[in-house]
Image (cartoon, rainbow, N blue to C red; front, side, top):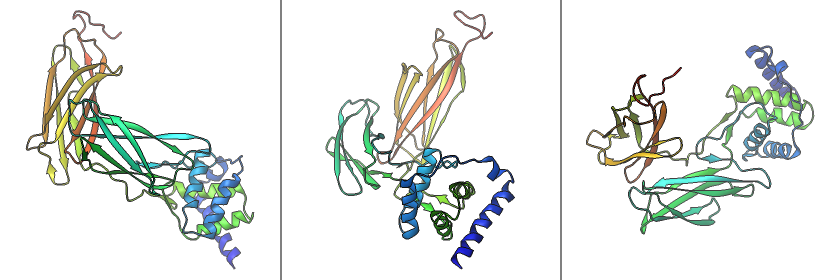
Length: 324
């Protein structure tokens, strides 16, 4: 009876695939075999569906290029690297203070309670960043990052190590079991998984501990500015309660070569706005793209936005290279 149910499930999947597009199964060719370590994960999941082995296995197959569906971890979720490899997670933040080049102390506690400590330099903008190594044996789960600056504890942040969990209908375990018992081929199983992932029957979620900045920042200005005229940049900051008054705003203008041309620091007004303006020199290189980095913090949350614009000149002006 169970075999008949599984056969019906597989048949339904195949019919769905052909309804979506008759060429679906024909176009995708699976030449590689599924590695044994992936098969072991799926076998473990079939035996005990309380584990995350199925989602891990699907991401492994996607990363290896065997599964055609692309499963990209969401923001703040970092997959474990392959055996023998090391990846680095960027940890960054703001102190809320500018104009001081000091150090910040970071304590990172993994999901098993082990602590790693880092001393990181702080830039004049109040920003800091460092890289934390991650290996295949790093524990999965939530990591807590606590920062201390000038003896004061800053708000904690979090990141998650491991693959996003997959929400799967119960009947998919029957399909997996039939494949493990070699009643369907690797190609049939992979085609079914591809189709179910691409059509959101199998859904990959995000861990609830991931926290995003509470600040919503918009940056507006002219996208093209003529030499000898003024560029105006308006920064607007809001949160869940509306405009943020007194948020610290740091603006840095540079080119792709990281040459800094202008720097500004100020605070938002009662409408949540901060405005800066400066004159573009008449001798400024034309057709040059500038980047405006805007760092905003209210002391609890912080975020960064980037605005770009191009400087141009009119043909006939001194030192003006016109487009041909």
